[in-house]
Image 1 (cartoon, protein in one colour):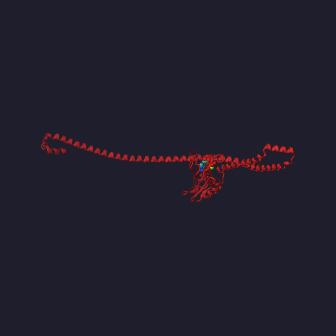
Image 2 (cartoon, helix red, strand yellow; image 1 turned 30 degrees about the vertical axis):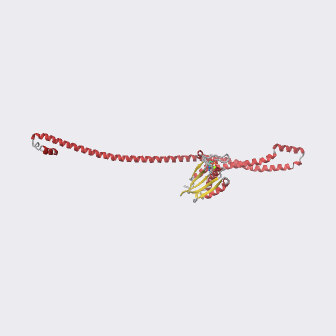
Image 3 (tube, rainbow, N blue to C red; image 1 turned 120 degrees about the vertical axis):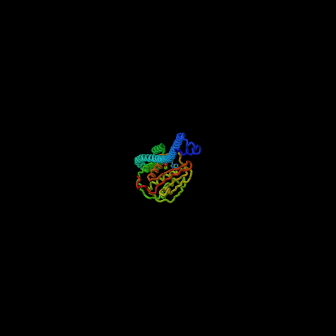
Length: 363
Ligand SMILES: Nc1ncnc2c1ncn2[C@@H]1O[C@H](COP(=O)(O)OP(=O)(O)O)[C@@H](O)[C@H]1O
Ligand SMILES: [Mg+2]
C-alpha cells in the first residue's frame, strides 16, 4: 500500500509502526486521498491565477494601445480644428473681398452711366461759357467805345444814358462779369475732373499690358503732382533694385497719383516728408510704399477708405473715388493694397504686385 508522498514521509518519520497496522489502512488511505485532492486543488488554483495574470497583461497592453489611439485621434481633431479655423478666416477674407468687388462693380456701372450722361452737357456748357466770355468782353468793349462818344450826344440822351448806367451799376458789372464767368469755368473744370475720375473708376479705358519700370512711372507721376506736393511736403525717394513688371503702366500711375495726392492733402500745414519706397517683397513680388507724416486716419474710418465715394474732404476737394479706383486697379494686377496709419503721426500705403501676371488678360 502506498500513500501520498508527503503522508508517506511523515508516517515513516513519526509513526513507523502505523504503516504496518492494518486497522489504520482505511484512515491513511482517506488522508492520502485528501492530500491528493488538496494538491489537485492547488495546482488548479495556480493554473487559473496564471491564466488571469496573462489575461490582465494582455488587457493592459490593449488599454495602452487604446490610449495611444485616443491620443492620436485627439491630436487629429485639434489639427482639424485649427485647419477649420484657418479656413474660416480665409473664407471671411474672400467674402469681404467679394463684397468689396461686387460693390465696386455695381458702383462702377453706375459711375460709367453717370459719367456718360454728364459728359455731353458739361462739354457744351463749358465750350459755351468760353465763347460767352469772349462775347461779353466784346460787348464791354463796345460799351466803352460808346461811352467815349457820350459827350457828342444831346443833353437829354446823355442824362438818360447816365441814369441807366447808375441803375445797372456799370462799374460793378464790369468788375463782376469776368469774375462770374471765371468761377463758372472753374466749376465746370471741377465737374469735368469728377467725370474723368468716374470714367477712370469704371475702367472705360483701353490700357495695354506691358513690361514697365515702376520707378519711371513713379517719377513721371511725381512730376505731374509736384504742384500739389511741393508747398506741403518734401519727397524722399528710396528706390531699390526691381525688375520690370508686367502691368498696365497708365493705370498704376493713376494709383501712385492718388496715393501721392492723398499724402499731400493729409499734410495740412505741417510740412513733413512723403517717403516713396520701392523694393522686392519676395523673389517674385515687388512693393511700392507711399508713407506720409500727415494727420493719419481715424481707426473708425480705416475700414471705409476703400469704399467708393467715402471722403473726409471738403466738397470740391475730394470725390472719395481715388482709393476705390486704386483698389480695383491693384486687384486687376493680382496685387494687394494695404494701409497702416496712426492718427497724428502718419499713414503708409503699401502695394505689392507680382512681377509676372498669372495670365495675359486677367479680366
Ligand atoms: N495719406 C492719407 N492720410 C490721411 N487720410 C487719408 C490718406 N489717404 C486717404 N485718406 C482718407 O481716405 C479718404 C478716401 O480717399 P480717396 O478715396 O482718395 O478719396 P478723396 O481723396 O477724394 O477723399 C480720404 O478722404 C481721407 O479721409
Ligand atoms: Mg484721393
